[in-house]
Image 1 (cartoon, rainbow, N blue to C red):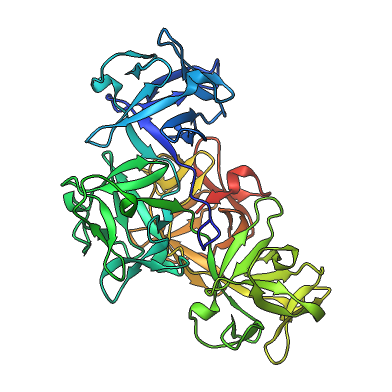
Image 2: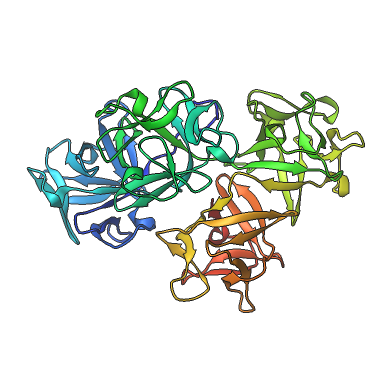
Length: 490
């Protein structure tokens, strides 16, 4: 486990055949075809490695069933476990595409539309699949060899791989997919060129083929060389290697939300003065930034400092940044109160700010001193994915689609406990009288974010309703209660 307490993201992807169609697992009859023009839920596959033989992989569908091939080349997706017909070998090609070979029968998987089989003895174009990652595109990048995270180094104008913990907005990288290749985009919207320079436009020098080795990722540039960290700061650029070794391998990890909290006294909560937390600072630095790690089961949050320790409830209700491990006393329930939050410790008491700025969990109810303003700092560009796809501008109107396979970047601006959401054209989101979310506002409208679940948030309108994707795939601002259609990966 790396220092950030994260596991690498499970590799989920779409597979695109030679006709540009995605491998699809139908819900009915566990059939597979290659008919879909875009990547949605039915086109997402999860790669699982064999525990004994790391060369062998299993492909799990969105239904939790595994792709399998029998001796006659008949392909199904019905198996609910790792049986011998589900064992495949990935044979990577120089253009980044994969051939999938049945380990049991040594035949290759391919075809088109409803006519898929695993019977080819040699690889032709029909047996090649391009890989489209289905992960949320914003993540942290960990060097396997250096055990350090990548981040934008503004002063050196490079991506450096030298962070112990992926801290601050600079550690957020966006993987952008175009025509089978990927670009790495920094938080200030520049692209990594193979020479290590950051470019404002993407092009041939910023396009990388993604390769998989032992469950890790390698990025191959247009000359066939691989990205790796170089020199003392780990400058990310292409090296001399034309085969990926340990230095060229990376893990993608999900990026946890990082927040700054302001107390009722108008000061930032900080660890600058020592181990006891206090709201007594006027500047925002790493000492005032905390990473929220939300438990998948309880939905309570741990707050991690830039030093790597957690907030902990200690005797007499004190809150100190001394814990090195998670426990019941490092978990806090966050209550979302519109533009403010309240935090309840494991003793059942709310955290309040004393006159000297000290934080203590001693209060039974929420008053002014128990409320904090919480600001999300590491998502200046927001990419939102719901249960049916990404949020994207509608082609022919001012509304937003919530079920697209492609995404738009929206910029997030904090405003006194709320946020303004802005498109690339500089116009703002607002909710119209019919309850539709529109994206052509001249003036900003307040929305509030609630970081409710591990990796997912809810967005509320100024009158408290939830943004949700409706059946037709349109984004609406009329949700009365929290449902799966109102939760967004971010």
